[in-house]
Image (cartoon, rainbow, N blue to C red):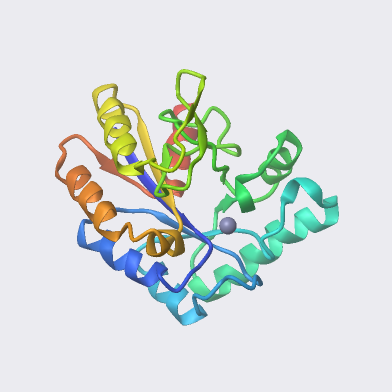
Length: 229
Ligand SMILES: [Zn+2]
């Protein structure tokens, strides 16, 4: 099976997260916005992370791409890529839509650029994305879920007692048995706020020990996808 991870927003706690993932040899992609008041990761922090992880774009200004005009969307795609590549000195080929929001039109626009992959925040996906410009995730490291869509298509209400790590483990084991794809997603600031560092370490320690798991970045997954079709 394939295991990939992605982390959004460029928070200073990304440094701690990168150290944790490196400890277990877990690969992943850090999606960084350029000019957004909640980005606290410096360019030198970003450069350090880029030595071990893939850097993706999380747009220029972290706006909802579905409610802005054509020119702005192109600017968000291209300017962020150009500036991130200057700092990371490596090609930026993956994009995570701010707020996880993209429609067919936005995904189609991304396809016409030099990016190879576009990620939403749609959960419970355990397959190679049908459309690599509208890829989903398996689960987010977050207990902040009031209602969420079960893979069988119905909504479950978790009220305030959702434990992401329980669902993550059962989804992961399912993906492993069926030789599927598991995409772990999160925000380091949210891990910090919810005090989830230990739970995350426990989960990735469990994953790292499993056999027949191939660890890839989001970009590597997208290239594998292209080679299959
Ligand atoms: Zn974001």
